[in-house]
Amino acid sequence: MTGRGTEASGGEESGRTRWWSGSRRRGHLLLGVLCAGVTAFVATVPYHRDWFDLWVYYDAVRHWTGADGGLRGAGLYDYRVPGETYGFTYPPFAALCVLPLSLLTWPVAVTAGVMANLGALALILRRLAEPVIRRHGLDRWTSYAVILCLLALLEPVYDSVSFGQVNLLLLALVLTDARLLVSGSRWAGIGVGLAAAVKLTPAIFVGHLLVTRRWRAAGTAAAVAVGATLLAVWCAPGASHAYWTSALWDTSRIGDLSYVSNQSWQGVLARLSAPAEPSRLWWAFGVAAVVGAWAYRVDRARAAGDVRGGIALTGAAACLVSPVTWVHHLVWLLPALAVLADRALEPPRRGRPLAVAVAVYVILCSYVVWLWRYDAGGIDGFIGGNAFVWTALALLLALPRRRPDPEQRRLDGADPARSGHDPGDGAGRRTGDHDVDGGHGAAVLP
Image (cartoon, rainbow, N blue to C red):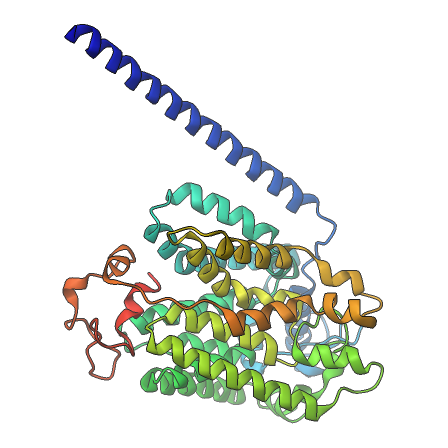
C-alpha cells in the first residue's frame, strides 16, 4: 500500500516536473519568436530617421571647427543643413560635448551615437525597471527581454535612436541624479545641472528639486548648469553671444511649430491658429496652469514619499510646457510608464490599472498623430493630431500615487533596520521611515 502510494506520488511529481519544463520551453520559444519579430520590424520599418539629428550635430561642429574643409572658426549658429532651414539649436555647452565628433568619420560617428543611446537605455532600464521586477518577484532576464522588445516598438524611443538624438542620454543623467538624491549623496544635482546645460527642457527638474525641498541638490544643479554655461562662454564667446542673443529666439532654425510632430501645448495652439502665429497669452495661460498642477501634484508625491512619481510627473510637465516637443522628446514619459506598470502589477491585480498602462503604451506606439500630418484641422485633427499632448496631460493630472510600505522598501533594496540611521538628504537630516520628505526615497531607484 505504501509502495503504491509512493509510486503514485512520484509519478505525480514527475508529471508536474515534465509539465513545468515543457511550459518553460514554450515560454522561451514564445520569447524567442517575440524578439525575432521585433528585431525584424526594427530592421525593416519604413520610419527610420537616418540619424538626421546626429548629422546636424556632426556637420555643425565640423563646420564650426573647419574639419569639413571650410573656414576654421565659422559661426556655429550660421550653419544650416544643406537645402533646409534647420541648424544647431542647443546651447554652446552642448556643442562642446559633441565636439569630438568632428574627429570621426561619419560611419564611426553613427556607431558611437547608437552605442551611446543603447548604453543610456540600459541605464534607464536599470533605474526604472529593476525596482518593479524585484518588488513583484518577476524573472529578471525574461522581464528585461520583454521590456526591451516593448521599448523597441515605442515611437519616442525608436525615433530617438534612429534620429541620433540626445534625450535618452539626458534622461539617464536625470535618473542617475535621482538615485544619488535618495541615497543622500552630496553629488546629487550634478546630473540635472549637466542635462540643463546641454538642453533647456531638463531645467524643469531643478524646479522639481525646489518643490520637493531638496535645497542643497537644487543649488548644486543650478551651480553646475551656470558653471557649464560660463565654461562655454570662456571657450566659445562668439558662439555663446550668438546663441543667447539671437539663435535661442529664432524658431525658424527649429522647424514649423505647427508641424504635427510638435506635441506640446505650443504645438496645439500653433495648429489651431495656422498659418497665423499662436497667441502668446493663451500659451502663457496654459503653461501657468500646467506648472500649477505639476507643483501641486509633485508636492503631494513628496509628502507621500513617492520620488518616482515626482520624477514621472516632472517628465510629463516638461513635454507640455516646452515650446517644441517633437515626438522623440516624449522619452520623458518613460518614468510615467514605469509607474503605471508598477501599479498594474500590484495585488489585487484589477483590470483597470492594467488597461490604463496598456492604453498609454499603445498610444505611444501607434504613430497615430501622423494621420494628420498634412491636415490637423477639424475635431478629429484636434483630438487625434494632438493625441500625445492629451496623453501627457492625462498622466500629469491622473498618474497614480503610491506610498511604499516597509516590505516594499525591503524588496526595493532598502533595509528597514537602517531607519533613522541612513545618511540623510545631504543637509544633516536623517531619512528614516517617519521622514516623508526623504525617507521612502531609498525604495525608489536602485
